[in-house]
Length: 542
Image 1 (spheres, rainbow, N blue to C red):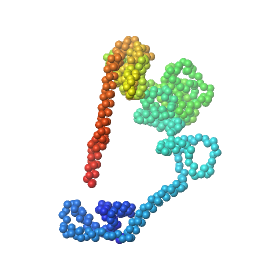
Image 2 (cartoon, rainbow, N blue to C red):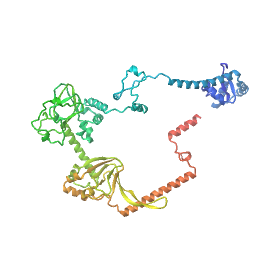
Image 3 (cartoon, one colour):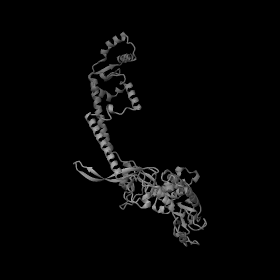
Image 4 (cartoon, rainbow, N blue to C red):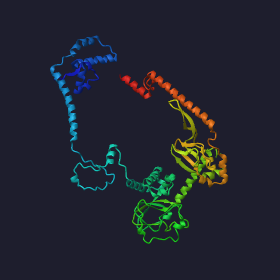
């Protein structure tokens, strides 16, 4: 073994920055392999060397006395390593091999460790096992719930949750509605109203058939909760639309719901007939009753559409018929204003009188069309008159062309060519719908498009003067497109495409011949400010 005043280090790797890092046996062995001479350093001599190096780096003048002393003492720095130090190095090297083999032994032994029984959350009800049911003792400690459920293991592999069943979504939606509806409508935020609308969609509530989907969030803002703390209390369904959140009810009359299109005289005759056995029918959680349109000539406290609570603490979600009526009037006025603003942005309708604009806006409907959908097909009648509120559409025309094959032969092919674009405020289909003419082009959405449309059925409801005004104000959208224009446009687009293709081929050939590698060398992107600062700091460290 070496004395405490010396440190076993290779001479060629001695440095004042690496003394601490080379103190471990692993680094000693690694560095000793790359060294040409192995030596023992004396700490007293080493301190003088470090002192001289610091003086040289600081720019101080080294006295001649210290220089001569260094030349005299430097040979004493080297000492032959005796056999004992060589044995220490071999022992250290052998210990490294032992560590690697020990790691392998430990990894093999981990396989033989006893398995633990993890506690897993059971998200879905397991199916009934038709085989023999074993007790926990007979199953053993290695039994894991969902052991043979492939969906469970796939969710663990991808670190995701098992998809919830409809019953779980239904229960979660009911819990959210009960907690959110406890807040008064004027105290709820827009986000909370949105959560109420999402809960109704998740549970696939029957209310969605009676509510406008476009204004579902606005309708959620007027929803309230009614709580009936006692049994055998009457709930008057003519006051609004209800959905059961907790408890059960029995109907007093049938039917229990009324749509806007229902015939009142046939379904709800006077006097209101009552059920002989109300307990024969039961309204449970998630069921709906009542109406959004109050029955004419009936009191709001009439027995029609009414229910009787069967237990205390019944909770109901209520959308008042009067509040819904006032809300729809406000939304209709706002919607009418949006349609008028859209008509004024369209050049064909900008100079129309206000009376005609109001009439045509009253029959307009909103339509959302995704990207890539064909709205109008060439050589067919347009399905409606459309005005683009947002998004863009492309107009295509099919032309007959001659295509040159690689063999030099030519063949006839049909090709679709873009002849124009429809943006915000553009309209189409007026002449085709009114006169029943075939469309001269196809219209395809290039982005998601929001349209205001007028169907042929709605057009018949308009005043004949307004219909003639529509016909006189509009011309074919792409009436300037004829065979001569198509020929010139096709030649221009094909020439441009061939030029770009030829230019690209020349550039690629130059790159290959010049052995240019885009993205490297002088063709690389200039470094950003952050990269320049990082490179500068690296140079300063060196």
